[in-house]
Length: 226
Image 1 (tube, rainbow, N blue to C red):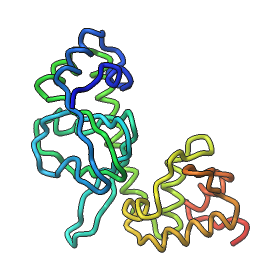
Image 2 (image 1 turned 45 degrees about the vertical axis):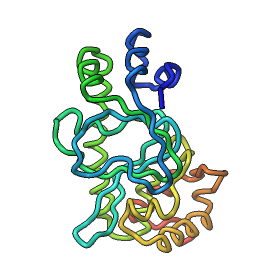
Image 3 (image 1 turned 60 degrees about the vertical axis):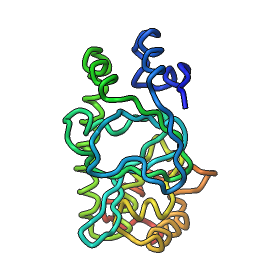
Image 4 (image 1 turned 90 degrees about the vertical axis):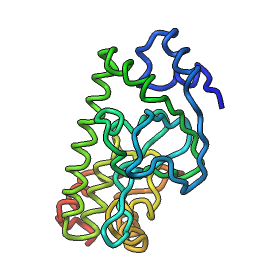
């Protein structure tokens, strides 16, 4: 399926490129549609493309030695992914799967790699993403090392909190995969938080009504209402 120039114009990473370059990339880019739970990138595959999520939602994940899923990160519309294998020419380090019906734009390595390193703003954005990914891995390990399920859930929600609102909050199952917990355990923690008026559902978003209490619970400190 051909890619419209307007679709590439809407991608933050490519916003600094001249229109002639955007048009050239659009001419050779590909659009792929994925069903819910379909694998978008396979672990161990060669990194042949830089990918952009146009619509939908994706999750990076891996498996433990006993075949349990471990969620690593989420990909939102406008985000790019597959950059690690593109940069170091090594195999794809984790799986990326679709959490819902999703549409992905792929641009071949041969086409996008020279552009990435020739435009300072793109190279800086790429370095920033790699830095964020590294910091995210470190924080994820810290959260997994917390003692109780309540601490883990609260710490992850506190990390995702953007000024009192978590947009498109992950499902309990998606959070469970991220935290190495069961869905039922995550649901019980949410019941606790909602019962104490610390968080509240608002459509697909989650409102954080008491940030300080959420942070305290993430640190293992009991708050009023215990």
